[in-house]
Image (cartoon, rainbow, N blue to C red; front, side):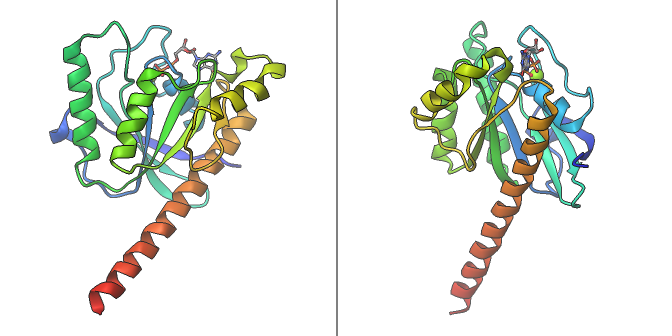
Length: 215
Ligand SMILES: Nc1nc2c(ncn2[C@@H]2O[C@H](COP(=O)(O)OP(=O)(O)O)[C@@H](O)[C@H]2O)c(=O)[nH]1
Ligand SMILES: [Mg+2]
């Protein structure tokens, strides 16, 4: 039993439409077509995020309220895929504007789950995003997708090769393959473990700050 209860409660196309922030948020990011919708559907056990073989045109932030079976509540935030080459400068700019506004709206963003295609490892667009997340001090959990496209014998070597590129992840990166249930169950656990750890660190930092303020 490791299912989550989930509910899509807000779709926001701009800053004005962002919902009030009542829970910690975990943000899912990745290049268009990386398998983000597929993974979210597997995590939530619903066909709720639209899966398409063509890079999508979704420009909205989708907010799912999640309740785990340990009674932890958080928002899973699905942001639009980035970096589809055929898109022009204007779309790139509006993508960055939306992302920048969301991340700078003073919300309780706990960390980012960054999806990377296991076949390729981090590509230029991934590195651009990583650099930006570093610049705002946002921790990340790396999840490789499409692991099933690589033969079992090559998996370990390729994983090590990707790790040598200097991947920074709060837990060793997960490898997922579409709807492989075993992988999804451990990813769900990993996501909640990292959230709990982040909340603990936040509380410690708050206590320290309160102590300093008293002195
Ligand atoms: N083989 C394989 N195909 C996948 C996997 N995840 C997604 N896909 C396929 O990749 C395409 C894009 O998936 P989608 O979830 O819509 O990607 P998104 O654009 O990142 O949301 C679809 O054709 C999916 O069926 C995976 O783990 N393994
Ligand atoms: Mg999608």
